[in-house]
Length: 72
Image (tube, rainbow, N blue to C red):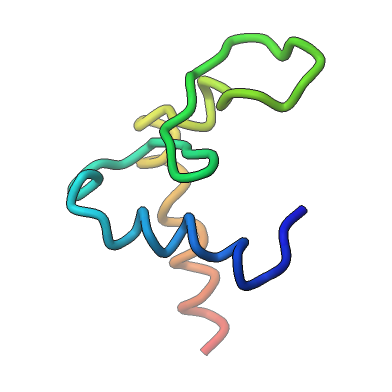
């Protein structure tokens, strides 16, 4: 766990980086894209395949938008 200041740096850097422009469904650790894994090896290393699946993203993205629209 990182303090909030340093903990925000990777997300902010990647959000503004031209290296990731237009790229979706990627998971990064310490500002580096991590590998996609099908099984956990007892550590939290890697991103689960379902977490970076573009079909899942397309299917799930409308849900928070709908919830936020009703919250206003």
